[in-house]
Length: 114
Picture (cartoon, rainbow, N blue to C red):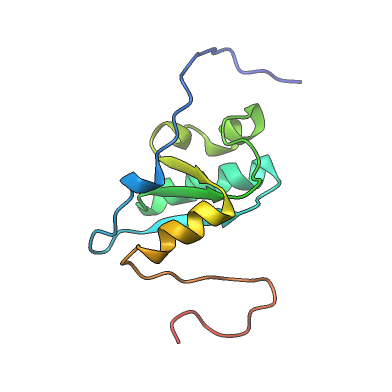
């Protein structure tokens, strides 16, 4: 209803999993099958705000370059690297990843620090 008065054309870039390393203190956020573009945009914006290194999209995830997602990132899509992988490719990559991996689930009851 109230369109913005700016238009831009940018190439869509995905980072390859093989280019992600576990440097000391780096944080990467992996998301599995996110469906809502607004939620994905909010996560990308939050990753940018807290200084995490990037986002890894696993499985059938909404398009990080859709209009809704880009709008929700409020510009962070231009600063946050995004990698995309199948579940199998992510698990294979994870096998050789030397960093800490902490997972969450809606029904989780154990604090990740324990």
